[in-house]
Length: 491
Image (cartoon, rainbow, N blue to C red; front, side):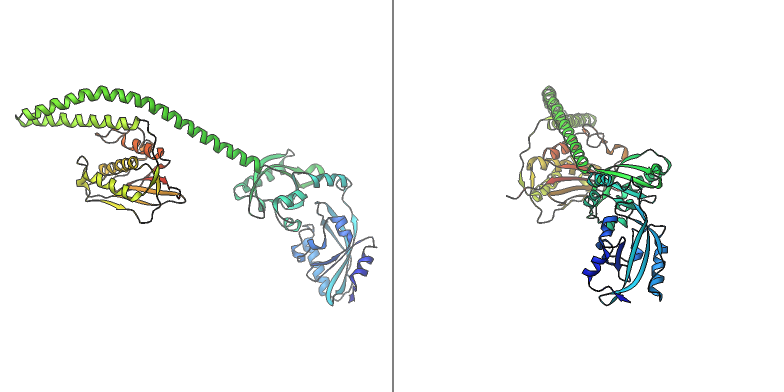
């Protein structure tokens, strides 16, 4: 076995011959390559640091026969092989055909293989045009050639910079290996369309870089059947990630503006309702006051039949109901600017439960007690304490009015993610039918004969005025309302 000796003398000799010369170890990892490798293929020895079986640049139809030929020669007694012909894909995706002779040599006292390769068919002059290749390499867009299965045959420099893969790494991949899971079916369909049509396919696709970042591309994909390569595809990808992000930001801004406009219109409507409610309250409460005085006087004077007392009690109860309706309407419609301050939640929750427990108009016989679960160490919230107290009283009163006899009502609080506290009011009564869930916070909507339909509407307005939100969890058994409020920033 000949030793190739000093590498400088060997390099000088190898670069004098009109052939591509390279040396590999027995696993086909390249040790040395003459300058012809870079000149003719665009690769260097550093690009071939993998076993022959993993070589992505041997034409796929020749890969198995080349591997078998080299393995058989390396294991045999011959020092020089018979000529080997195979096709090779260069860095630009062009196909070369080489005739190679392999010799067994040693390098640094280790067995090695010396390849002397003469090119017997160069790519056509059109593809070999260096000005054309310079244009492709300098393009701002990603330009790639793919085989029918989507394997990368060629990629310009922009591809490596954008996706983060080296030429060797990309040569082992298929297009769908760098496509997001959500878009793989789209890419597969577009590849199939190109096989059946000469027209280019245009679509948007999300790609995943080597570092795991998602990027957007506007893709143009077409078959190369017109260039005598019907099994290949040309793809041009333009980076539209910045445009997509800008569009998403615009959409979010427009949605925010729409919400602000709706809030403004809602406040304007509430202001108008507030003015109307004030006039109505004045006009209704004056005769109501007279009515209360008259009925109260009659009840003190009349000590007749039981029917008379019963009728007077009904009149008094209905007048009270009308009075509550006026009070709720005024509270719902009256414009109010909350006075937010750092607030300890626990006392407000406990005081709200105590206030509901003392209210004689509520059906306390249905529950033995209201369970209050507020852990220690909750962060302070940004709230208007009196208004928040009223909202929690309304939620607890609603729970008591819907719980079954002997049932359970609970109010609890907990941290909810970053910068929020969640308050939940639960009752184990009947669940809310799905068809009315979307209307539960609408003003004047109620399922109770004696309800005003303003209690939950008032709660939502109080919560939203304080920068929070409210949601309903209608379970199979029971109903839970949750209120999320922002924590107060540290002093």
